[in-house]
Image (cartoon, rainbow, N blue to C red; front, side, top):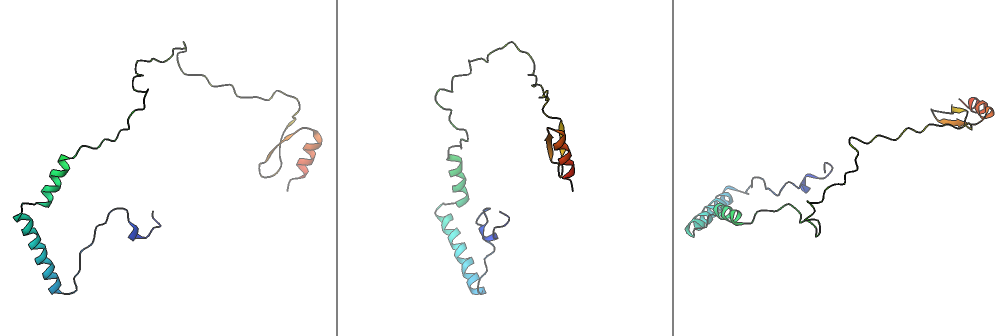
Length: 129
């Protein structure tokens, strides 16, 4: 999101301080705002109080997903005891036991190559730069 233009902000739609063309328009806007608040008080409508009452009357949000059918009553099923106690051992590392490969040669830039005969070893050693 750091490459996106600031006008595409996802943090809200707050407007900055409103500027008026001249002082007459600013005065009219203030008068309209005051008359609107007086009218709300006259009719008994408090905007903040109304929002608060509505929020308190709403049902609380539920963030958990319902459990699928068939998975609700499985708490009584116990795990199988195999008789092993403790952690599982790791498998042994593989080790070459054959006689075909004579060794490992380095051809270029740490490239490991298996060597099967003396001729290959000589050719690999002559290929170096």
